[in-house]
Length: 244
Image (cartoon, rainbow, N blue to C red; front, top):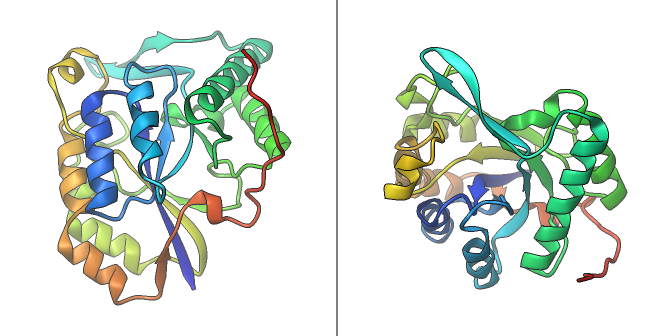
């Protein structure tokens, strides 16, 4: 059996992104989302998740974001410096905020723009994931596939990366075991155009692909089981208590 988690990043980024993720869950193949607890629509995202019992929700640790301007990567914002103690303080603060919003532990951890692939963030985030017995994107618990994305490595449009054909190709190439396909569905409103984030209109195309009848039909006719991180055997976290 091939078990597939289709995880939507950036839940809570904006009302438009939230709407796109909900649509891709209710009408498409998205089974999971990663919540950005410091973004402006985080409370709305948590409220939406409360009425979607089949949508798994993890923590999308948001430390900083870079964007491309005039061909160069520039820092758009930062919530911490690169000292390990400062990073850990921010990670734990966002974890506490997740618990406050959602009333429970996240079912997985990942990071905005995959910053946990690099030190010192990698060691800090891995330690927190082990402490909570949570799957961390890229730790080997669940195979991560990032090939569904509408931009190249320098932020240039790459529309062929988010077509129905591309998604069908990824589905057909799934290996046995657990796999996560990452995605970034959403709708773009006026506030999104002013926010500076580099991934915008591609989100519309992702929603359309994730909800396409051909994609859902391919899964129906295959041995792929759609699931979420809460079903991963290793994803068992200890009890915790919310404190004011």
